[in-house]
Image (cartoon, rainbow, N blue to C red; front, side, top):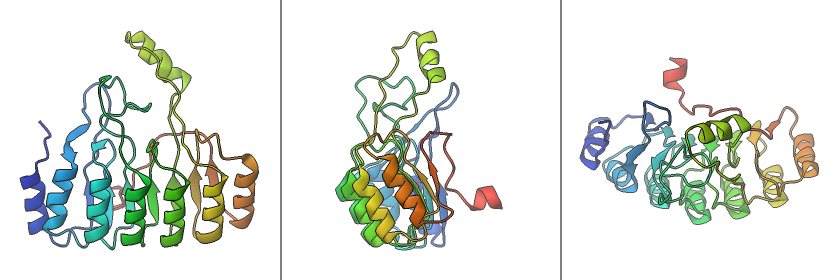
Length: 241
């Protein structure tokens, strides 16, 4: 139920060459499941058959990794909005009641750097809970994606209410998981991203308030969030149509 296969997405790609927006996101609640079937193989099959005009892609809560970023970088030069936050088998903090042997989100600096080089028109990016990324990933974004206006680079969203929910279900509370980014990331954004208007750095304890203040001073109107307030969709057509 709800499975997405290589053949089905490849067929969609071949028959819809003008596709500009695609939602493959999963979700967690008592009635829905994450999209375990949206994998690197599925995305690679689809991009090999087309999708050259793709501009908006939602991969929230899917089983994708660097291989998907490499494929997007090679075939989707017009990509503007991308959500790769939170893995379907997330053991990093926000995967609700996931099995203990689940694998963590595997996006790395190398993958994000490739994406930045190949998709330099990126203006909206959500990398929430991609906890293997470091300052090198943000530096690559800053170097290649000068139109970037929205960036969510936050860590875990483990509020007291959710911790209590876990306990009520007989599960152990999950530890707070944080991002590795430092002030170096803020300096990179300050130096090379003049269009930046919204930034979320929740659960990034190595970023000092002074560097955030310096960034805001250089970007009048920049909104910096230091708490998680829920996921904002990257989709445009479905929301605005």
